[in-house]
Amino acid sequence: MREVTVSRVVDAASDDLAAWLEPATIVEAEGSFTVETIDESGDATIVVASGPGMRLPLRFEDREDESAIYYTQEGEHGPFSHMETWLEHEPIDAERTRVTLRSAVELAAPLPFGDRIAAWKRRGELRRVLETIETDVG
Image (tube, rainbow, N blue to C red; front, side, top):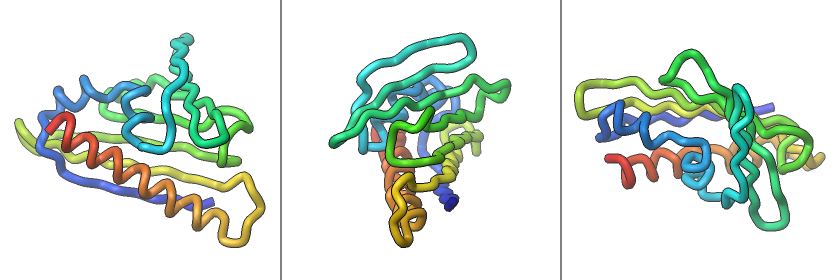
């Protein structure tokens, strides 16, 4: 398993960013998948996303800390045997917010250097989230 982290200070107020951070918006911002369905169930939101040749459910869990979002690939459908992601944001001042995304991944396919490739791909997705935040919220 590999872990990747990306972080950036964005020109967006923390409240504006928090309003933008919805499960489907985050999945679309990653840029690899399109949202098919959203199911609100109890303490979680399940986003079913699809991409070239695959569908995968992503489970977004409600947390007590409103400045953190946690989600995982649910079940065995998808490119990873394990994937979990944390998105955290903290205000720097009235107009800027530090956003940090951290993800742990393990590729489902037994490829040489598979986890390294999965981490490289995941890092690109997390960077796209930061770029989208700057464009859409900043």
